[in-house]
Length: 387
Picture (cartoon, rainbow, N blue to C red):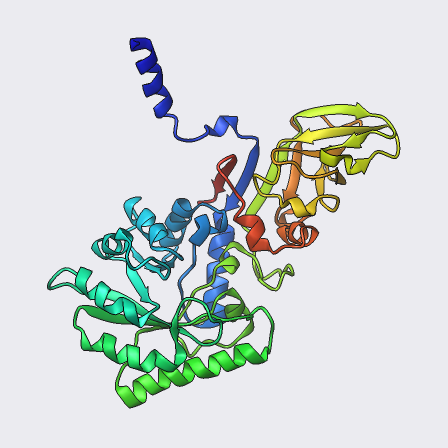
């Protein structure tokens, strides 16, 4: 019995897969992150609040927060209060803004206690928030207004009314006015221009007619930063662009992709003409050929929808992924010179000689870059360089 208890205690200490046991590596270049921040600051003419929700788009939330703070970033955005609390409990002492929460959950009281900026998305949340704010303290809040996307936010028609209610209570410090674009990745888009018009009208109305001047006014996501003039606002909150990705889905040299994703060959074998490969035998070999096995699949980063369309690079040449992508592995066409442990490139940075980007993988998957990134899971070794 004593031996069994000892064994259980030892097992309980193993909380993560050790790095030495991981065969997939996402290398994050902090120099690229810093370059992208500077570019976006110059492009927008505003302060930048990077969004690091969803584990920083797969780039690692905790380490990304450290890189950003060291780069002089004052405000960080996340989606949920849970993410904000996680950051705070792991040592981030700067301003953190969050906008999704269950008003009846204990997460709200915890977030208030931990001095997290909370966005007000519903007039009906005000009384509950007020009841949770300790006496003689203030809660920093951002009024989140819906200018057309019809997601979580205060309706545009009620925005002034709600702003006036917030200003009536000393427990609230109204530091932000925010909204969100529908399709800012499209230049000169009519709906986006209309959202900008409405948001500017709201800001001006609050300032000029109601004497409510709010320090941080922000609507621009990555597409807004790159495609529209938002220099009359005070803050922008890019997500994918921080990591070097243009949301239009096309590579641009102005942004530097920060993540390089690789795996390795773990087996080389031969198949005959007429042999099927993978689940459902979707791929039938047209000749005798060499194949290699790579331990990465749709449980890691690769969407299964890329089956039959995905390519990787091995030893400088483009190789087709054969058959359906499995949860844990892919089968790739091989060449006689290939060896066990040879690197397999999924995507990287063209400026560094990588011949495939995350845009390519997203296109092969009928998906978007953000969806590819957020599939980064615990089996991926996230390694940081130049940090």
